[in-house]
Amino acid sequence: MALFKGKKTQKVHLGVVLGQDFGAVVALDKPMSEKPRVLLAESFVSDGGVSSELRSRVQKGVLKDAPAIAVGAPGQYTLMQVEPPDVPPDELTDAVRWQVRDLVDFPVETALLDLFHVPEIPQQRKLAYAAVAPPSAFHSLLELTEDLQLACETIDITELALTHLLTRHPDQAVGVGGLFLTRHGGVLVVVRQGALYFSRGLSIGTDRLQMDAQTGDALSLLVLELQRSLDYFEGSVLRSQIASLQIFPTEVELPGFPEQLGSQMTTRVAGLNIYDLFEMEQPLEPADLYRCLIPLGGALREVER
Image (cartoon, rainbow, N blue to C red; front, side, top):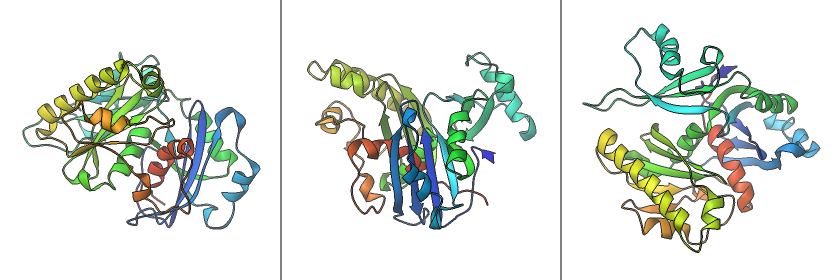
């Protein structure tokens, strides 16, 4: 099994995530098609384990032995922007380990590390993102794939799963932002022409937004974080404005949130309709849709077989 790697097309892909509070498993038919069909989308409470029904479903029919993409949840790894040093390719990983050694709180010598290069922009310095995790970071996630007898081909990360989803949006041709909110924080990504150009963690999540709904203090702080991040990216990296900022579905309802956010930002803001990207027999409950987002994005990834 390859870490963070993958390529090629299969008819059915599975995606799986296991976070601190919940897990989810999805299956996509023809994931590289214009609008893949969702064959399975089920979430569960992390400490409750998977149901016998789910275990049975993934071990039968077209799902049996289908390639699975496991996705690391936020908090299981650290993602940081780096400037790749000018060294031979076979020395690059060790060189980046040396760069980030003081930025993580675990021994970097034994850490899992992979690089995602930002496409080169004329007259700009080369940039990349390093995903770094302790050796045991994905232990529970891989135990889940073994418990379900999934053919796990690769491990992805949340930011790349979000990238796969945004690549399906028409604004990605010139640049599209994506806002993914958890209970206690969030992630901002910018995707252009199918590639991740920018990512930044955010300190405001849905809990704060709900708690401060009357005062709007948390919303103002979130706007400040987002606007500063986009101003930096648009002014120093892309040197042009993104087409829109798409808000991924949240676990809890935030009435009027896209409109409130959009009224305070210079970028056009809209809620991302996941049902425009996939064929589903019936809509999911909001909490289930949120929990299945990351494995849906993971299952869109090409894998080698």
